[in-house]
Length: 257
Image (tube, rainbow, N blue to C red):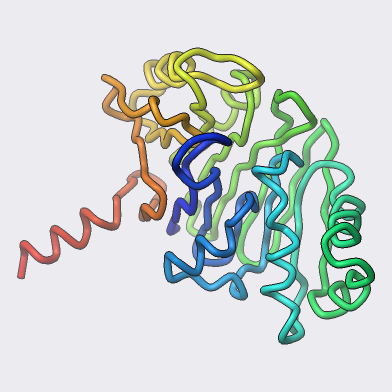
């Protein structure tokens, strides 16, 4: 499984708002500017088959309009675009299109073949395109959910989205090969985990790679060796037992040559 961090920042940080791409086909969250950031990273938004939304705050959701435009403005999809999120996903997309490009939604819907999968607080599972995706109810300031994405090789990536420490975070930590998690501040506040929460989780799961994301600019380091602080654009290769930064792979290859 390949993990590409499109953005690692919070609302007011210098970094792009938190978003990730798995195997060039699963997009997690669509924050403002995500499609432009993908192009800058050499990624193709038309290759996305699944989009997971953790919650409907603007810095996680508002570029969904431009994902649809990338997918259906100049062509028609020949397969469904699967969109998984909390209850109300389909209605919110239609509302955004009416605000952004009035009258365009019927044509865009026809061109992109969206299939909305909505989960309430009970969460749920969906399978397709070679993946199994579990949605787990998290605790933010609005309805929110994290995800566990499992590929055909049994590699499992956890992604908390915005949340305080809650049972879903512990469940993701217990079942993931690596976990991308909200580390907005040094201490927990305003519906977000802080570095102190993540360090406590690192102590309980010392062999689990933790990738701190949705960070303010001053959240940059930890004494725990299993906490990573990726930058925008960083890519990792993930197996069931290992997390390898692609930049290190390239360095090792160059050294071997």
